[in-house]
Length: 128
Image 1 (cartoon, one colour):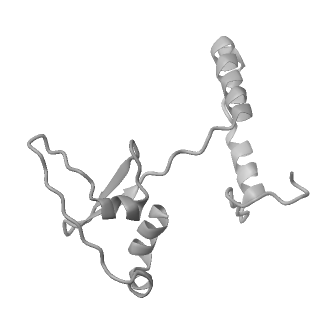
Image 2 (cartoon, helix red, strand yellow):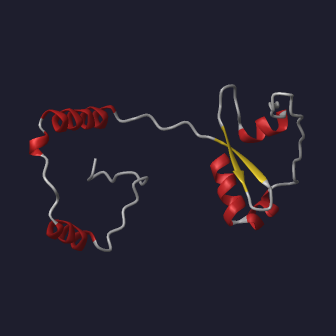
Image 3 (tube, helix red, strand yellow):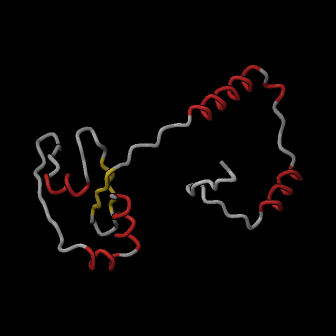
């Protein structure tokens, strides 16, 4: 949700004006060590919990936007094992490595020209 709000603030500020009932403001004080407590209203709005990370975006006019850093998605164990295999093989047998020919790159680019792929879209039943 925080990413969504951040995106909306950047690209569609008029949307928030219509959907959020009011601007929420909060204050906190810096300690001698430049630390602060995130106010409860901010924690609830960003759904922050203990040990969560906060991302700061500082705009040219001095405005600071806080967003919650989303936890990274779990790595695919099969892909991880395959990449580890490739790394070990390249380290053990560097003589097998070959440069990609420029004509192959051009051919691949011509075959994929105009093809758009949404990596976040679910697979169809035929592709699963």
